[in-house]
Length: 345
Image (tube, rainbow, N blue to C red):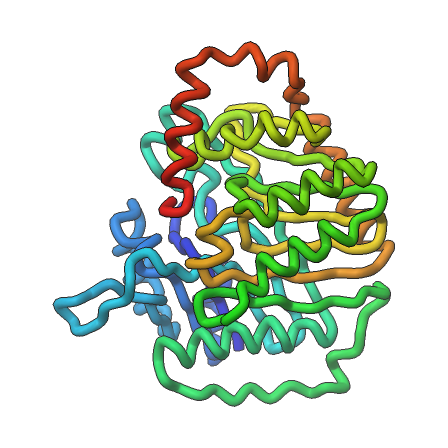
């Protein structure tokens, strides 16, 4: 079987090879199940084409959290399934920040501005794949009320050559204690030497802001990677409203150069632990979106993440405190006004 779950899923030129692979799997008699978020995909350039292609190939597919009152299906439109994952036979999985679409999202406004998204995914084998598949199975049940039983030979789930400890952390409105936010905050408070955060939409609450600035005050080296240019105006300006307090605390802010949008979502703590997944560091991801993150402990993985961070750094410029203090008053006012609505974005 192949289990596919993505916030945005579009059949376009960039994703044609994936859809061809799914079609070939269906032709071989493989069960292909697909979940895609309704609100995020509706109205997109290739929405109808994508659904037709899924139907024609014979895949079992469902819209997640549909907002279709005329069909008797209605969910709060502010609640979204933001997860990105793919599982093959319970043996191999992919997860991370990338949607299945062209790097411009096929939107005219992005093409006109020359914007392209940069993402990060991981390929996994071993016991952790069963945990990722369990997230898919629970989401499938939520939409279909169908309980799926997928048999996996545990002997085939032996860990590969890597020596990593992995823990999948699903989160969303159904989780009582905002486990996603608590995970990030706990790791920030545990940092002793280095804390590197990559988040395209960085709009922290007071608890997270305190955790980050407290790390700086303890002498921890804190770096934050964001995009130089934003694709969502209100979120972009709300994010900018935090730069002053971060810079004053000693956070080093790296701005990934336009016209690229750094969409990766990760955090590394010292040289021991990393988190990677679909979650941004904003209130939408912590309270409204269904997300999936993975906590990883292991030197090999951290070394690879350091290489990724070094590449991001080479393609970024540092925002200095002197530069920031020269911002015009109108920009500061706009940023602060956007911050007032940050909980709604």
